[in-house]
Length: 347
Image (cartoon, rainbow, N blue to C red):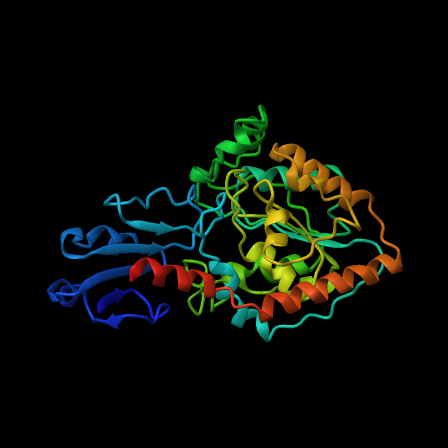
C-alpha cells in the first residue's frame, strides 16, 4: 500500500490523504505529487518524512529556473520536450475542453491573410513586429502586440535571441521598450485590434493578473479575428533550441482548423509530427523549423507569408490537413502517458 498527498485531483491512484501532516504519520510508502508549478509547497515538503516527491510542471525548464530539486531523487517533469525525456503535455490536455465547443467559420481560399497575436513583450516578438512593419504587412493582416505599461522587459530578454543577433538590443532600447511606455508605432491594422488588445484591460471580467474565470485570457479564441483571417503566425513562449515547448499559441490554430507557421525551438514541427499531427511541408516551405538562428528563422517565415499564394486545389489540401489535425487533437487522450508515468515511478 502507498499513500499519496497531491495538490490537485489530476492523479487518482494510491490511497489519498488530506494533508501533508497526515501523510507524514503514515507507515507505508509516502508520495507527494505537486502540480500547477506550486513552488512554495514544493520547497516546504519535509523530504525526511516522505519517500518520493514528484513535481509535474506545465512550464518550460529554462523559463522556470526558480524550480529546483531539493533532494537528488526528487522528480521534476517539465512542460517542454528535451530529447527523449518524458514531458508534461499540459496545454494539450488542459485546453481540450475549453476549445471543444468553440467553432470558427474558416475560409480556405484567396490570398493569405494571417493573424499574428504576439502577446507580451520579448525580443523575438519585437523583431517579428518590425519585420512585418518593414514589409508593409500591417494593413492587410491582423498583427497585434501587447506592450504593457509599467513593466520592464526584465526576463523577457532571451539569451538565445540576443546573443546571436548583435544590434537587436539597441533596436529595443531605441524604441523605448525598457521603460514604462513601450515606444511601438501606433499602427492600426483593422478594427479587430480593439477586441483583443486595446480594450482588454478595460473589460470588467479581466482581473489585474490577466485572467478570466481563473484562466489566462491568452488561452481564449479571438473568434472575430480568426474568422477575418485564414492563416496563423505565432511566436511560441520560448524559442530556445534545446527544448520544444508547445502552448496555446500553436494549439489554438490546430484546434480551430487553421494552417499556421509556429516559431519555436528547433524541430517544433517535427515534434508535432511525432505526436501524430500533419504539417504543411508539401504546400509551403517549412525549412524555417530546422533553422537554429532565430532571426533567420523569422526571416524565412515572413518570406513565406509575403510571397506564397495558394491555388484553390492547394487550399483544399490544406483543409484536409487541418481537418485531420483537429480531429486528432480532440480524440487523443493527451494526459494518458503522463499519468501512467507518474503512477509507475510512484509504486
